Image 1 (cartoon, helix red, strand yellow):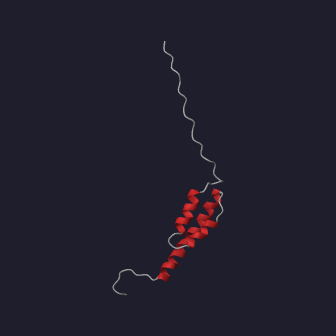
Image 2 (spheres, rainbow, N blue to C red):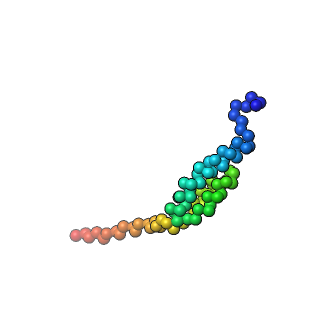
Amino acid sequence: MNGDVFVISITQQWAIHFGLAALAAWPLIRIFRRAGLPPWPVAFLVVPVFGFAITGSYLAFQRWPGIAPRVAPKPARKRATRTA
């Protein structure tokens, strides 16, 4: 150590990344299944740096067939006022 306070090797960085990806995989697979989407995009978690962003973007920007679409409420009608 060259006096650096916190130094980890690239092997340790990869181990941390794959550990976090493994921890996040099961909950994400369940989210994809409940949303009615195929769980294959969870495999992108193994891509360093961009994997979580790719998986999250796919989940965010796909239509979820398992969820009913939101319908905008109809605007209220204006009542005609009568003057006497």
